[in-house]
Amino acid sequence: MGDHRLILPRIARSVIRRANVRHRLTVVLATLGDLVEDLVVSVHDPLNIGSDTRAVIGRRRGGSAANVAATAARLGHPTRFVGQVGADPIGGALVAELAATGVDVSCVRRSGRTGTIAVLVDATGERTMLTDRGASVELSDPERRWLDDVATLHVPLYSFAGGEIAATASTLIRWAHARTVAVSIDVSSVALIDELGVEAVRTLVDRLAPDVVFANAAEALALEIDASVSGAITIVKRGAASTLIHRPARRSVEVPVPRLDGVLDTTGAGDALAAGYLTAPWQDDPVGAVDDAHRAARSHLAQGAGRTVDRDRPPG
Image (cartoon, rainbow, N blue to C red; front, side, top):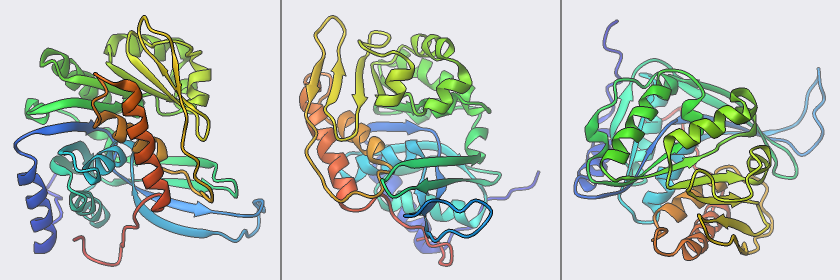
């Protein structure tokens, strides 16, 4: 196979180089997972199956791990993203846009075809995802340098849904434990739980031995989470309802969520919350870290749920 890496315009290379140099000293957070294009389809009326339905359609950077990294960087924390995108123009645009947020993208591999997630958003803001992860699942041959100077490694459970990235994620987490790097896992998806099986997911999380576990209300219900999972601080995100914190050998705590009206698209809010939590002093003050997480999610929603990627313009 030939070298299919995209030759980026000079301005894009400059953005990426500045972001990478800025993060060589200390990285608060590294994320491993997907960097994809989100195709967001917002509809306000019932779908007319077999006919036309009016919609607003936009494109933006997506992928849970990339979203967490971007929010953490915007909060002012040194952050690294580890993953693989396609050797195609949209892949180049996505990497350059992520670097522009301040994320270290020096550990991004370029090969194959960039993935796309179709996100259907209804009038209530509820999201349904159609996933084609493309090159994201092909990340293989992990490198120990990916964890250099990292304090916390965050991995969405999506990374264990198949492909070479699953073995890569397991290896990197094992190395993280050996380096006393904290590990965070996001349960990611009820559909993923159904696909893998409840017991298989529980066994997997036990094996990964995370320090922090994130789940939304539906995922917590599917896994019957009512206490700390695998001895980790367990954060249950419940939308506008109070966030639950389950701690080992401690009573659970509810942290109220600040009210925010007029939100039509909640895409990325859970990732923003994870970023806010993991860049706060969560080991010393998990309750205060959830307050920081709420502020990060609120800011994300107030500013709109993501940034558009312009396919017609060179990256950078």
